[in-house]
Length: 265
Image (cartoon, rainbow, N blue to C red; front, top):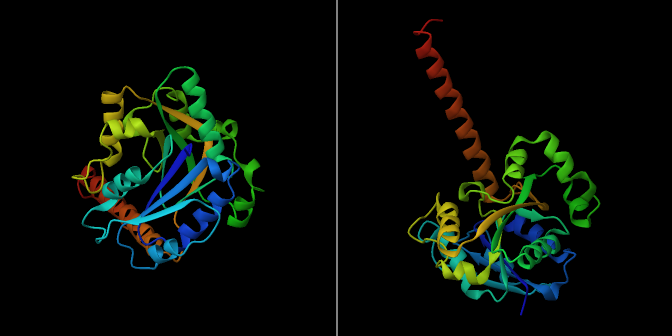
């Protein structure tokens, strides 16, 4: 049996998925220890066809929801991945998350550490926006650029997670890079398919905590870089959404400031 099943739901991420596969091929954890499961949710850019034609060294299982993304969405893709999985531990990975070369090895070691203490845990990894050239990242030559110790000194979000590292709340642990024992995910019936977008993370983790007695922990040494590559349809949508959100917040702040000033110029 595989130790890890890496589950990646994807939608219109052709270029980024190619890079993720290379990053998984480069993992320090032996390939016989893990499998990769991708579930496409209605891509129109050739993502599914690329995955189906993969002939590399990874144990790769490819599936699809079979319908457009707005019908089932991420929860259905996640649950299909769980059903296809054979690993002892599940690793949920966003399709714009590129793990560091030692990420899976460190993740498995963390599960084993907590297991020896008799604890049922789910692990929230750490990630940051891409700041390294991808060639360096995939070869591992940029590994020294990140360390939990340095990040702890300057990143407020990291500091908050680190303070709660042995007991995170469900809202502190998005499934972008998240891992839990397979039997526990099955016990809580996986992800809620009646929720199409926001809230699936919280619902899933809340059930893990309440129904399966899971403790959510933060393992900062398990690290990835996050963000879709330019050229992907989803990358363009991400940038436009972020730009619209920032513009909305700016306009809202202007309106709030104006009302406080009584409309004075």
